[in-house]
Length: 436
Ligand code: AMX
Image (tube, rainbow, N blue to C red):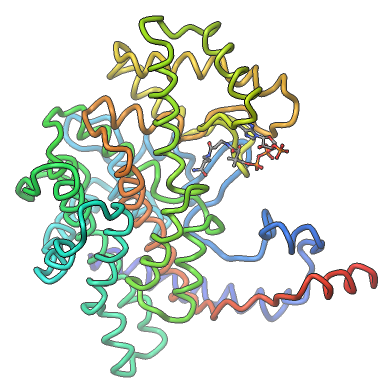
């Protein structure tokens, strides 16, 4: 871990100086004209935040630092015998901006194993919740129950200096990343299975151990699928609801536990993280309606046209920012083409891939007719026997912990201040519009 700390320490001074230079010499420069539409419609695409860890290009998809997801998956260290980049490596890249060596990723995995123990009071707190409590609610409660051990908060109470903020942010980030798989597995096992969590295995990497603790499939393919899932969902810029909520709450110097608990509540929204569970429900519904018929492009075209005529959206297609097929979808598709072409649900996903974009294009109003990651993730989990859709957003959350924690560290390292945009009543917006 010393190596990661040294890298952040070396970069933090440079980045802070750069931020101060921008503020001093270019602070008044206009980068975008604000419009009434931007103020009303959720500040979409308004360049008004700093996120160091990743950047979303409408055509190329997300880049973790300078690397596309294809390059992340190709270049970063793998598990022995595996073909998928380890998510720990993605975290290293998101934090330091550098591709980690095998040794650095191995060291990080070891560090996470050392920190994995979840305090008994947190597990007991989960056990007080009714079993029909949504898994995302359980996860948010557990995150807050862990907060009493925040090192950032302890140090803050003891008068920590500003240049030490990132050091204790990193401490909390590592603790949260280390513990969240056990908490998620506990939530899965108590909500959907017998309540017993398979033993934590320090011989495995972070994702493979999580896959094993879920206890649904001992297949090596499942461990690879979970590595892929956790690597692909780790970060998606700073403006999405969960990343922004984490950043906003963190900007008040609330510690990483408080900040991520807020982010988790945002991730639980149906327009954000919950969308993947809706996609799988839609696919299963289509499968039921098709009955014994093989899913062909022609049948799916008919089905999609019918869905649109009924005034419904087709889940898993389109995106608020992307204007091309989501690379996360393409990487999941490549994985499925290697591991599960015989799966009837994959065959349905494949038919959708070919049939739906032309139907959406013909309709004429959709800005992006291509599939997003949610159109595939559920099929992979379902194939490996993780069938409870209510749990899928927790999988997403375990992964996204990497990105939001990496950014939390950087927000403190470069001293980003409390967020406080100016809001105005609609009438004032009208007055402003008349003036310009
Ligand atoms: N099926 C049918 N209609 C669609 C559509 C789809 N998949 N995607 C967009 N449209 C419609 C919109 O509803 C809108 O119709 P309207 O003008 O009558 O209101 C019109 O096409 C233009 O929309 P847009 O500008 O292309 O998209 P958007 O930025 O408003 O919305 C999104 C983006 C993702 C909400 C939308 O594409 C959608 O509802 N997709 C299906 C749900 C989904 O896949 N969600 C997961 C997104 C990924 C994620 O963030 N996790």
